[in-house]
Amino acid sequence: NAGVTQTPKFRVLKTGQSMTLLCAQDMNHEYMYWYRQDPGMGLRLIHYSVGEGTTAKGEVPDGYNVSRLKKQNFLLGLESAAPSQTSVYFCASSYGGDRDNQPQHFGDGTRLSIL
Amino acid sequence: RKEVEQDPGPFNVPEGATVAFNCTYSNSASQSFFWYRQDCRKEPKLLMSVYSSGNEDGRFTAQLNRASQYISLLIRDSKLSDSATYLCVVNQGWNSGGYQKVTFGIGTKLQVIP
Image (tube, rainbow over all chains, first blue to last red):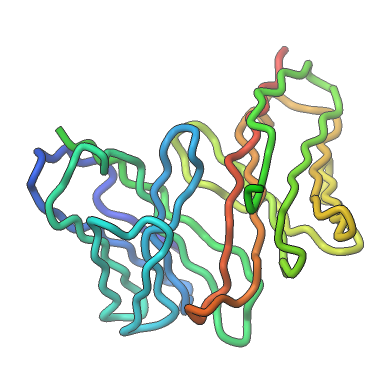
């Protein structure tokens, strides 16, 4: 049982480049999330999805786009990478709907450096 | 006031000691609470949920005090392997975006010393 899988694990980009981070979950969860974690700031929500075909902005959405074309996948795109987007990115998923108040399960993260 | 507040530590304790962390939250309508553990350069992992009546899992005990709006985590007989950052997580309930707002604390770092 893979749980939540993120690819890639590491990436180095140059300023202005674009890329897509992939998150896949096999737990049939409705909700999926993208977070970034920076030293001293904890986890901050970038975007989230409450179901296939839906996305919404979180706390720090600027510079990122997302798509949820399939229930099991949640993609995070960086349109034009900036050094301020150097961070560790975590994807998470959880049950939703009538199974609320359930904990989130995390992927093992993507370490992204923007030069 | 921050939505979820934790003392970042570090808490340096000897092996075998008992250590307790508190976490305060600002939204009295918060519905569910969790403690996560995060090892260095790893993802957060669920340690335990926090129930209204308090709950225990081996050496770990979680408590909820709704009146004072805080949750606590007690670790007895600390092991070297308990060294990690402990994240307090609060589900604040449904928001206007149609999902349940979950807020993570900054985490409390625990270092267990031989």
